[in-house]
Amino acid sequence: MSEPYRIQGETGAWEVVIGLEVHAQVISKSKLFSGSATTFGADANTQVSLVDAAMPGMLPVINRECVDQAVRTGLALEAKINPVSVFDRKNYFYADLPQGYQISQYEQPIVGEGVVHLDLPDGETKEVGIERLHLEQDAGKSLHDQHPTKSYIDLNRSGVALMEIVSKPDLRSPEDTAAYIKKLRSILRYIGTCDGNMQEGSMRCDVNVSVRKPGDAYGTRCEIKNVNSIRFVQQAIEYEARRQVEILEEGGSIRQETRLFDANRGETRSMRSKEDAHDYRYFPDPDLLPLKLDAERVEALKAALPELPDVKKARFIAEYGLSVYDASSLIEERATADWYEAVVKGGNGKRDPKIAANWTISELFGALNKAGLDLADSPVSADALGGLIDLIGDGTISGRIAKDVFAEMFETGKDAAAIVEEKGLRQVSDTGAIEAIVDAVLAENQDKVAEYRSGKDKLFGFFVGQTMKRSGGKANPGMVNDLLKTKLAG
Image (cartoon, rainbow, N blue to C red; front, side, top):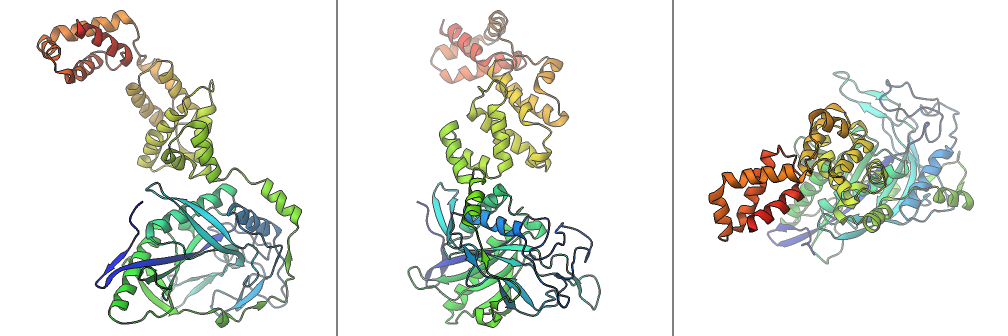
C-alpha cells in the first residue's frame, strides 16, 4: 500500500481533504428550458431565445432529453434516482445572468447518492462517494477583452443544461482527484451524456479544499471556481493546501471563501467570501411543477445503457487475459475499447488478444501521440493493424520487420501485405537458406565460436544478431536460434 499524501509543515504532517463539484454540459440539441441550439463556437448571441434573454412573460418548458440524460448519468454512477425532484430559483446578480436567478435544484435533486470506482496508478482501488447530481441552467459569458473600457455579454450559453455532480469529501490527494475526473469523464463519454471537453468549457470543476491533522475534524474549506483542466486542478490543490497549512501553522485561521486559480502564476487568489445556501434565497420555481419520473421509463433507460468502463475492464481481463494496466488503458475511452475489440475479433478470429493489446498500446498509441493525432484520425485502421498481426502470426514477417512495416503503414496508409510484397520483406523460413547464412557467420567468427564453446554462453546473442543482420532481418528468428544451438553444440 502506498504512503498517504501529506503536506509536511513545521508542526508535522497535514492531511488534505478534497471534494469536487463537476459541472458537465448535457449533450442535447437544445437548452434545458428553451428550444435554442447549443452548438459550440457559434457567433455571439446567435443562439438566444426570448426565454434565455429573460424577456417579460416568457415561461420555461423542461427539455425531456436533458432529464433522460441526467437519469442515464445517475444510473451509470450507481446512484439513487429520485422519483420526484423540484426545480428552485437560486438568486444572484451578474450581468451574464439576465433573469437575476438561476433555475437549479436544491433540496430535492433528480439524482441522489452514488459511487465512482477509481483504479489508481499503484494498482490500488478506491471508492469516491457521489453526494448528488442535479440539473441546472448555465449562465451566459462575460467578455472582458473585446473593448478597453466595457464588458460584452454573450448569452449563447445562457440556459444550456448542466449536470452538477457533487462528490463527497473522499479525495485525499491531487493524484486521486485527477483519477476521479478521468474516470467520471470516461463514464460520461461512454453513455453519451457529456463530451467532457474541458478546453471548450463543457466540463468544469469547482474544487473544495481543506486541511487537517490526520484524524481531526474537517477544517474550513475554500472553493476554487471553474478550473478547466486536470493539470490545473492538481496544481490548484497543491498550492491551496500549502497556503492553508502555512496560515494555520502561523496561528491564523482559514476564512471560508471562493477563490480563483491563476494558471499563469500557479496560485489561487481570493475572489469573494463564500456564500452559504441562505445567501441565494432558494425557493421552488413557481413556473415549473415538480418533476415526476415514471419507473418504467427509468428501467428502460437503464436497460439501454452500454457496457460501462468497470464492467468492460473486468471482461477484458477475464476474456482476453489482459493485465489490469493494459485493460485500464484500453477501456478509458469507449472508442479505443471498440477499436481494440475490432482488431481482436477481425480476420480469422484467432488473433492473440495480448499481442493485439501490445500493438495497440505501444505502437499505435505511441505513433498517434507523436503525430498529435486522435484515434479517429489514425492512418492505420483496426483491420489494417489486424492484418499486420496476422502476418506476424503466420510467419510471413518477423516482429522486428513488423515494426518497420507499421511505420510505413502509418506514414502511407497502405496495408501491411502490400508493403511486405512491395519491399520484399517476406520472412525467410527456408532451412537451407538460413543454414547457409549461419555457416557463413560461424566461419567468419571462429575465435568467438571457440570462446562460446569454452563457456561464454552470452556470446549466443552475438551470433543471433550477426545472422539476422546478414539476412536483412528476414530470417525466421526461431529457426535461427535452433540452427545456432545445434551447430554451436557441435
